[in-house]
Length: 313
Image 1 (cartoon, rainbow, N blue to C red):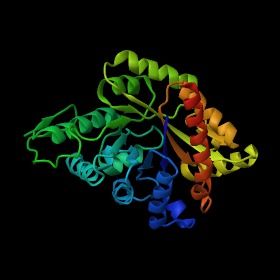
Image 2 (tube, helix red, strand yellow):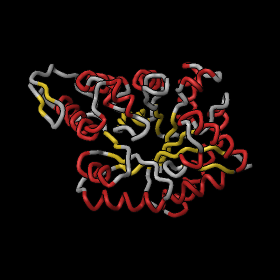
Image 3 (cartoon, rainbow, N blue to C red):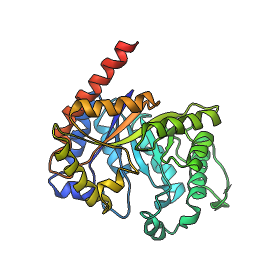
């Protein structure tokens, strides 16, 4: 199992005392502690540092880790220009880019799509068209493109990424439609189901419908604290500030865990047993310096998981 870290790049975290230099330093420290990947989120409704810009800086400052988006909303950007940008980041990182993508979430994303000029009702077809177009631009020089919703009679020559075929593209989502689309079109799966049994079921569905290798990953919101009640208060504040909804509601949608290292490790183990191979950790706190303080604790979780895997093999 590999572990990734989501960088705290929202305006709220920056206003709590963070800086861009500190984010890059945090990425370097995570690499030193054994994290396999560094991720940046995307939003138009919540102010944050633009993820591809941030990952460019992280790619230049690191040597080994994958840099990725968790998740990028392609509807926010011109598809052709984004293909060029992603290829450029892949070149700068020397082939270390992974592109997590999503189609938004009902009740959260409608206004973002309206602002971007993309119809929310066609968001899934739009996403699949964009990803297909990216791959065609990265592997050839198409003269035109006509998908379900995207139509271009002329396309420019495109920048080629570092890797043949371009960076892997992972899909966020666990609905039946998302599982089918992951099996048919995507290189990885990046959901956040709160029940490991649902994760195992979803992964089984993907594997039964696909003859391709799909990387099974997980987005997990975490806060390590020996006092679970205090940890829940921290996660509650994070949920209210991030989603304007109570933790009780968010935790029915997203995988979350708090408690001592042993409890967090046990949760990670349950998802590993359900088939997850790459766990992306988001520290659910807006407190100043929280991610820096949590990082060595999360490193202990990683070390413990590796010992378990080593013992099993």
